[in-house]
Length: 200
Image 1 (tube, rainbow, N blue to C red):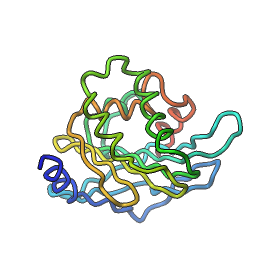
Image 2 (image 1 turned 90 degrees about the horizontal axis):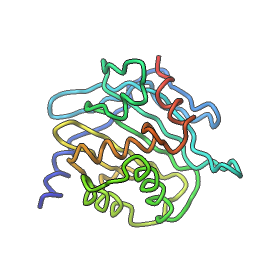
Image 3 (image 1 turned 180 degrees about the vertical axis):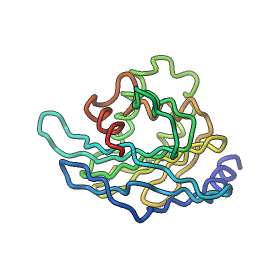
Image 4 (image 1 turned 60 degrees about the horizontal axis):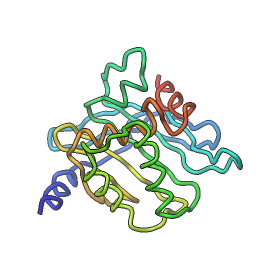
């Protein structure tokens, strides 16, 4: 019942690309809009892109996914933009476009590995981590689109290819997930920089 209610709440959130100039991930040429709009019960919320990046397999330079980050317009990110995005308690959004197929175990393992580096004690969101991992009930496929959308007071929706898989209300888990790309020990330092410095 609790999960159905959460899904009903966040099912009202629609993400619409604003007709604006695109930002391009330089290595793959993947384009993302400069802005997106979250259509919520409280009205439209415009989010601005903070950057894009490419995750590559280090040795073989195989493209794994491209990703774009967005935060609410007017957010004060200060000098350390990546750290601010990581901790930001304001509407924010991540979009991952997978460029190769791999196992479910590798997908959820990649999330967990980085989160554990940033949060050796995961007690504050252990149950949320299990719920999150259960969203991914099949192997990842090239072309899959994964979206994470956070709205303060409502939680974070995880979406796979347009289907909302569930929501997590715990802000501690939201912060932990964003640490994968913006934390003190991110999945890749260059990605952390690219995702936080490309905005106009």
